[in-house]
Length: 137
Image (tube, rainbow, N blue to C red):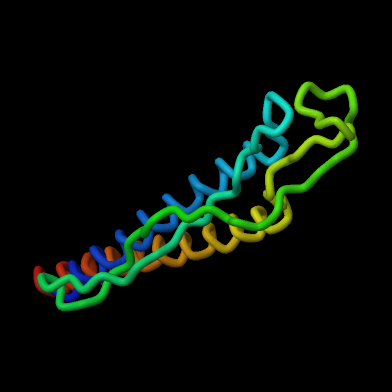
């Protein structure tokens, strides 16, 4: 029984970590076109979730946790929009360093990892139920 509970706890940490990752990706996508309000003001900077492996002595296993949220230091993009309030003297507006295609792929990967952990929970619960049925019968 203890192995079943350990599997559930480890999968739950994976669910939590991937859920947090999806929130960060959603924030990046929501701000993909958020330019600054004034010339020279930095636009939104892409966030990158990190993970860390943590030894859980109670479980006797390594589990995953969301680490710090890092900022992507790549260059912002610029677009020629002379009428924009944030346009500089040459008419260019700086936009976030968020690539929607990369964020979409990251989101898909996070969803797949979330689903894999959810499947572990589902199968473990089924095995636990079958074990209890065998013990009762």
